[in-house]
Image (cartoon, rainbow, N blue to C red; front, side):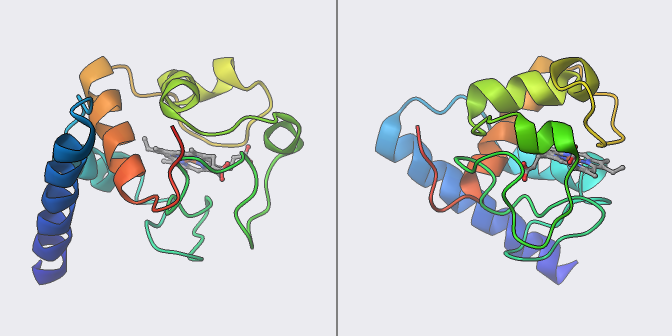
Length: 132
Ligand code: HEC
């Protein structure tokens, strides 16, 4: 519990910074962190180099698809040549199998648009190397 509160405070601080820096962040990273905890953390860590069943989501924003060290990806993920950003994450997370036929991510999709925007803001906040 202590850890979760600390993480939440961290996410809030990052959101505040992102707002101050760009003024263009519409997602709420703290709310997105809760989505991550409920829907993604069973398969995905948010720490560097810590793969679970899925690759770590630390640094995923701005990363080439299929490039986390240690992880075994599907051929589809390797071949996709996608870079994860707000647009590609939104497409993939809406319906992974429609967006990327052949992906082995066993997840049917996050249908609520605001939850996706918040989740993407959270993924950006745990990606120190983020690109536009
Ligand atoms: C039941 C397990 C599971 C759940 C739940 C899950 N994933 Fe995944 N995820 C995977 C696996 C396995 C892969 C690798 C897919 C492949 O190689 O085709 C993956 C791949 C990904 C990738 C590509 C990462 C990269 O390094 O290229 C992203 C982004 C992603 N997941 C985000 C999410 C998010 C965000 C959620 C929550 C909404 C989520 N996933 C829920 C198992 C899961």
